[in-house]
Image 1 (cartoon, rainbow, N blue to C red):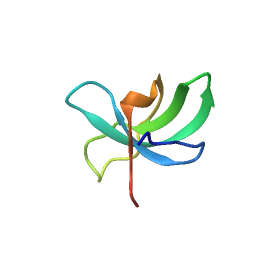
Image 2 (image 1 turned 90 degrees about the vertical axis):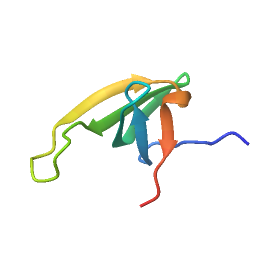
Image 3 (image 1 turned 45 degrees about the horizontal axis):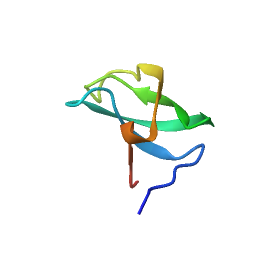
Length: 64
């Protein structure tokens, strides 16, 4: 079964093979997903947001 993703959905984005970051999908165009992810490691720090683009295989569903 293939997972489906929609705009506004909360996900984990695999930045490379070892690191994944929480975020949400902000747009989808031609199977390219644009996501806003939080890249800071410490919860006590402010949110460092980054806009990234990737294919569906870089996304993982996040249950909140």
